[in-house]
Image 1 (spheres, one colour):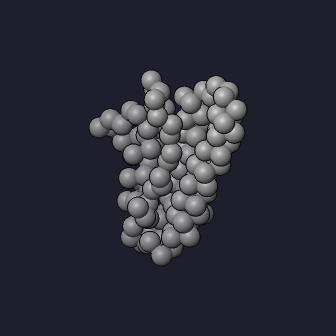
Image 2: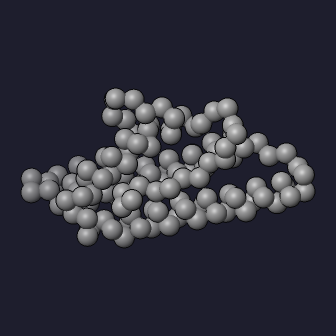
Amino acid sequence: MPYNTAVPFFTQVSTTPDYFANTTDKVSTDSFYWANRLIAGLADAHFSSHVGDLDDYQEKTMAWGHEMIGRVDRPLAKGEDVDFEAENQAMSDKVQEATDQLLEKVLLDASNLMINHFSLSD
């Protein structure tokens, strides 16, 4: 799993966040699948230049999963209700933002490493 991350979601819900549920044939950064395919395609040729950012992304997003589980377990242990769909959506939003930031870094680095690269980051 060098180019993406594991994302925890609660089960027994009726919907999955669109970012994860709606992968179509059209390439779009509005899809976790396609965003990670783009990251992989850009980062693979210069993996050693991107490995630190990829590792940071994975560690950060998986830590959010552990934090979410701990935060949700407390009210559940008290018998309180938890909106699992809202928790899943919040996780999706955070992962989407982190994935977009990683894509931006990888694209900038890949652009600068091109033989016929963009000059002055235009």
